[in-house]
Length: 352
Image (cartoon, rainbow, N blue to C red):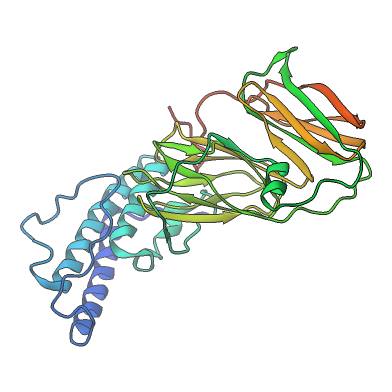
């Protein structure tokens, strides 16, 4: 589908019409509304710029109608900048400015313009943000272990003499020296699926924590913002493409991951922010330490298919292993062929 880019004047006209409709709606609401005589709530501050529209207008002193009108004037300013960015081919900046305008107006007022700025981006998650406890302790650097999940659920170990498996991911015969993932599937191809979980990948200190997380298929991840700046979490992966949009500190949106695979997520406002979500169907999995070392403490003896991957790898490797009762050791050779450099923006544009 081809979308024609409207001129700045037509965009400005559209937002002014939306502003007029909203102001008229507010005028009718003043008579009987619960905020009669009180200023309407202010939207979140713009993540992109400080408005200079009508500096003589003092929101909060002229009533809810005048304040709402001021919000729409500020939205118009952001939209004009968005139109310029779009005309210059900077789709990422244009969408960011458009999203800023939505913070002032609400998405419904600008719904007709949204495809113009979002065509080519991942599907937008537009559910209301959730409030979070900003005093919560930070998440760990990496997380994900089937045995840790079993311990938390107080599940009993296998009713057989168990075996353990320890090892290290290696690249070119040397320890990978980075985080990774190891999974084990019974060679029979039969096992009970693990229960999906609800977990957290937070934005704190302008990074994702954990920046590598392993979860079972169907799990839901909340992405809370603990920073004083806006963030925009997204993924362009075919396994789980999504765009959580802009939201500020103290808020979160979530996404459910329905398919197995390794998904890279980023922030469209901060190119250095990147994380990996490993969605696994295997009954046994563990995230390695920073040196690539891993261990499983209680495995039923038998034949397994092992998959190994590191953050330096483009895709997992697969090999057959046999677990005997007692201690077992193995070194897993993975590739170091992952692309380097910054992750593209949500439109696929190069950054940095």
